[in-house]
Length: 67
Image 1: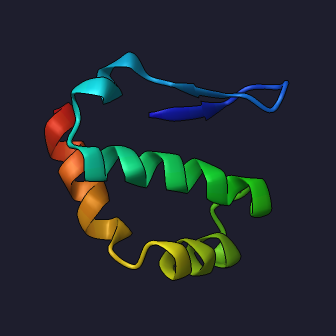
Image 2 (image 1 turned 180 degrees about the horizontal axis):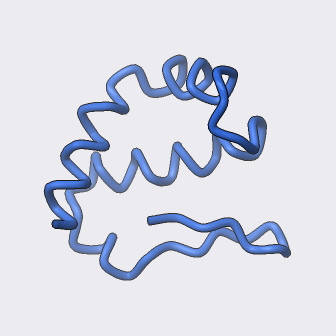
C-alpha cells in the first residue's frame, strides 16, 4: 500500500483511503519504520513490534479491506 520514492517522499495507494483508520495507521507506521530499518529483517520487525504491538491484527484488517 505504501511505496518509498527516491526523493524521500511516501506514495500511498489511493485505495487506502477506503480502509479502516487503524489499517491506514499500520501502513503509515510500517513505512516510517523503513526510515530506520530499510529491509524487512529482524530489526525491522522488532521496531514495528515496539511501536505498534498489534500491527499483525491491523495488517489482516487491511488485507480484508483491500480484497
